[in-house]
Structure formats: C-alpha cells, structure tokens
Length: 251
Image (cartoon, rainbow, N blue to C red):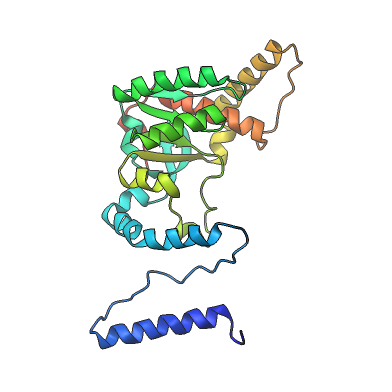
C-alpha cells in the first residue's frame, strides 16, 4: 500500500468517531491506541480474531473488578517483596499447600500427587506453586480448570517498571478468567527477595543436599541463574505456605 498500516487504522478510527458523534455519542470509543501485529506463523490469525472477540467481555470484567487487575510493585509477605496482581486475600487463607515436583517425576507419581492436591483443594486449601516442571504445570492447569484458587510464583512474569507495556498488562488466557473470579494471585519476587540472605541460605542448603544425593561436589550458583531462581521460588513458596497473618501483608 502507498500508505502505512498506521495511517489506514488512524483513518478508520477517525471515521468511527465521526459516525459516533452523528449518533449522539460524546465519549471516547477507544480506551487506548491500537496494537499492531505482523502475522508470522500458522494459526496466529485465528488466535488474534478470538482475542478481539473476547476483548469486550474482558474489558467489562476488568472494569467490574479493578482491584483484581491492579499491579502492585511492593507487596510484602513473610519479609519478602513481590510485584503482584490478583486476589491478595489468598495470602491470608488459613489452609495452604505447596506443589513442588521434580522434573524426573514419573507419570504415576504426578497422578498420585494430583489426587492428593485435589483432595486438599476440595477441602478448602489454597495451592501455591512455581509451575516449573511438567508435573507442576499439569497440576496447576487441572486446578485452574476445576476452579480452585491458586497462588503462582513467577520468574520475570510482569513487564519491567516504567516499560511501555506496564499499564496494559493483564494475565493471559485461563489466568485472566481465574483472576477475574478472585481465584488467582500472581507473585513475582523482587531482586531484593531473590538475594535476601535467608533465601540464599535456603537455596544453597537445598542445592547442596541435591548434589550430595548424587555424589557431586556442591558449587555455589549465581542468584541471577535460572537454576538458583527456580529453587528460590519453591523456597519462597514454602515460607508463604508455612503461614503468616494479615498484619504481615502490606501492599
């Protein structure tokens, strides 16, 4: 085309606004500037069409539950700081369980753990998980599908503070539905939390124990490595599940 896609879309938006004014609509038709996406792979077009169709309902849900979709940059729990979004009352739920499974867990072990987790969830437990291994992901997905509450610990799950995408961020897919229903809390530890001395000590003890079980010599790992961070997320989950009162949680 002789004109750019931005010019075409801008003209379309201006035309819609002009028609709306003729009908007596004085407000703004658009919440924000449009996103532009290039189609790069098979199935992307249909996914984008589905996304557009779902947008009005999701926008309504966000407006009905604004606090559930507000991003907090300094949520404190158990002496740790997180970026968070979702239902913060889940942190004060009296019955909690942690899902942590080895990447080497067998299908039978995963299914047995899933049954136990579902039993506890049916009895009112809130489940915490970093959802890293395939077993953890399966259990988290099953809990979401069945409508049980989840607290998910993330590594780099939110946009960086001050980034262009920060104000538009919302959980994707089934996480969005769970968040709108108050069944989800997302927690991303800050750098201070990852490097806190008590977290560092817990991670090193866990890694040393694993190394010794395999008859390896333990070698300390950097706090910014994925290995360290994945173990740290589970250690943080363990601390959160151990329990704290509402007076220890501040947004």
